[in-house]
Image (cartoon, rainbow, N blue to C red; front, side, top):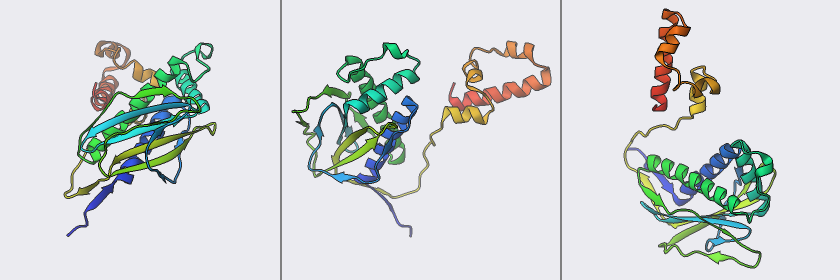
Length: 242
C-alpha cells in the first residue's frame, strides 16, 4: 500500500509564486524572486500604487491580487518594453500612465495563464480566470475584494525585482486538498530555446526554419548531408508543433 500524495492550498500558492517569478523574469530579461516566507492575512486588499486582481473558478475558487509599488511597476514595465525592442525614449515614466497599466495587466494575464496550465496538468482539474483588472491607487485608499469563498485561506508573499524594488502577491482560495489516488502522466513543459540549442540551431537559424523550403536546402547542400539536415529540421518542427 502506497502513501497518497496530498497537495494543499499552500502548495498551490507556491506554484503561483513560481509562475509570477518565471513570467516576470523571462519577459523582462531580469531576475524576479519571491520570499521564502509566506504571511497569513485576514483578507486580500488592493493597495498603492498599482493594484491588479483576477478571480478564478472551476475545480476550486480563488482570488489573485498583485500590488506593485510605483518603482517596481515602472522597472518591470520598462524592462519588458526594452526586451520587446521598443526605443527607450518612447517609454512612459509614470506608473499612472495607461500604457503602464495595460502592460502590467497583460503580464498578469500571462502569469495566470502559466499558473492555470500547470495546475490543469499537475492536479488534473480545470479552472478559468476573469480578465485581470488594473487600478492606480493613491496613498489614502485600499480596496477589499469579496470573492465569496467558503472557509477561505488568505496569504501574502513579497517579491523583489532585480533592482530590489518590492511588490506583493496576495492570494485567497477555498481551503482544499488534492489527494493523489493513482499514478498518472502529464505532458512535460519544454522550453523552445533549449530545444533549439539541443538541435544545434541558433536563434537566427530557427527564425528562418519556416521560410527555408526543401528545394533551397537541396540546392545549398550535398545530397547525403542534406538528407540528414532535413530530417533534423523536420524532427525539430514536429517537437515545436509547427
